[in-house]
Amino acid sequence: MKKRVFAGDIISHIGEEITFTGWVHARRDHGKLVFIDLRDRSGVVQVVFGPSIKNAGELRLEYLIKITGEVKKRPQAMVNEKTPTGQYEVSAKKLEIISASEALPIPVDSDGYEVDEEVRMKYRYLDLRRERMKRNLKVRHDVAHFIRVYLVEKGFWEIDTPILTKSTPEGARDFLVPSRLQQGKFYALPQSPQQYKQMLMIAGVEKYFQIARCFRDEDPRADRAYGEFTQLDIEMSFVTQEDILQLTEDLFTKLCAEIFPEKHIMQTPWPRLTHKETKEKYGTDKPDLRKDKNDPNELAFSWTVDFPLFTEQTKEDFFHGSGVAKFAPSHHMFTAPHPDDIPLLDADPMKVRGLQHDMVLNGFEVGGGSIRIHDPKIQEKVFDLIGFSKEQKEQFSYFLNAFVYGTPPHGGIAPGFDRFIYAALGEKSVREVIPFPASAGGTTSVMTAPSEVKKGQLDELGIEIKKGNKQ
Image (cartoon, rainbow, N blue to C red; front, side, top):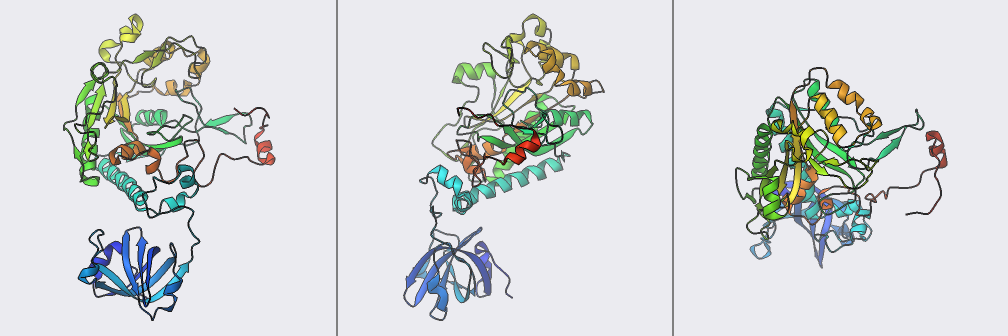
């Protein structure tokens, strides 16, 4: 049996007989000769069928086939300079139709932008066949691989954290999961691994990372998918904010040079702007610093630092519940105050600076992090300032208890994995770089969740659905 060869590798097999498997991307019938473009994940190659291949006339678009044939150079007049394999073709000697295909409900030979997104989500397994989407999948793989190699070489350990966790008031709506064994109680899907990674620092891990799944019941937008997303989670002990910025900047500068060689970073070292000056100068804390905003190959990274620890909270929301809190955390409730400003926690909290840092790319916040609070007294003080009730503080008792056993100073950052790739590629929506995203309306790709479940399943969980007006 001949060894299977990928389309992108045929250049190294000129004059050899090879086996090639793929989908019929295009078909041209010239009477005695049938030409097809055969596609696999590595690219497209032209295959020529002579009169001896009797079943070549049966081929239609997206048929999955296996051919055996000889790799040849095309006649000069037939060379296609637009494709990497355009100077070569395969002269077929044998054809096997592995799987036929009905007419596709969506085209896969275009970039797909012209197709209604809901239809693309329904047929995502077909949508992913197009070249642009395969490129995006490959970029995700390449980025993840580069990150893992880089961080492991720096002494980081990749550690998984739980998906079923506790519901705590952290600023976004939780996705709740009912417990069968303890009816009436619920797990929550993690908004981030925030508390777990801090406990790993207490455990003495010192250098942790994870390409983590996160879940937040928030409205979608162009740079944020509904429901779930992926982030690169990094946490370190015994570090300063400067250490975190330097590590992250070095990682992404080298990553871009490797994965996106056609793109150029506008300025290195990356500009560092205080929250105050970027708001005054650009009217936003995530400025687009590109010189030519129409240049898709320009990457303008920057840092925004010196955020206020608190913003003023003036209306009731689900985070505080009572509606009486005056302050809300600018980043999250675990961000450490600037050491010089700790006395202001009592005197004037709105003047306290937080050790927060935001990573900005082309006008998008693609990552955020901070030095964390490691003193339980300061953590409890922040809880008081943001208006946590005794009951709400009790939800974090396990966390505060852990802090009394020799907690190291620590901090980190969590670049958005999907969001970074979206911004770097200049895609129109973050959903374009996620394999199976939820639609803007919250419906999952292909499987169309959420869906109803059987009454018996609800009975096991002790849940009864209240019938009423749907909002």
